[in-house]
Image (cartoon, rainbow, N blue to C red; front, side, top):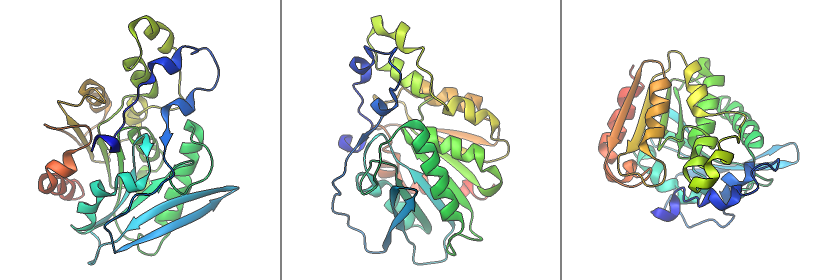
Length: 266
């Protein structure tokens, strides 16, 4: 499972931190798709100006409990993460999994502002699909995806019912500092991104929020997740489990699904 997850060795990339564009150092897209053991899903391809955005839509047999929009981590593409969302489709949720620019079958290049535009573009498309109208919408971000998930939740509060953040990164700057050598941290801390979960979460008012983090996480320290949680308004829950980074859905499927069921009842 480690190959699915966020495995930055970012410190050496910030030796020239004063140079302008470092956004792309946070993203590690893979074009090749893995074989998926799925039958009930749809591939989606959308044209956004000159960019093609790709996604998969995991469907459920029954009337959906809710619609989940899932933003995955820094490396790979949707085929590296579908096993994490498959249990939701098997338990009554329909799930849209998006590959941002440069990932999988999506064209373009991933940088922070492009990712933000892509996410909003796809959100707008999703909520207007017939299968989604009149369903509750959950925004779900994992690892690096927690940054854009929180931003999209903040900007669309009137259209969503819940926010889930799994392996939460507090900000692009904070994770860069975490992976930097001690002598480089004083330079890296001045890197500023256009949005961050620890700030955006402050503006999300009444949306129920579920934070999930392992106390054994070696990829993203649990302190970052706790910081975002502390900045969040009620209603909110912080669920700590034992395992690797963003592995809760695999290790504790039943409990995770039950928590999501309860989340949309609030």
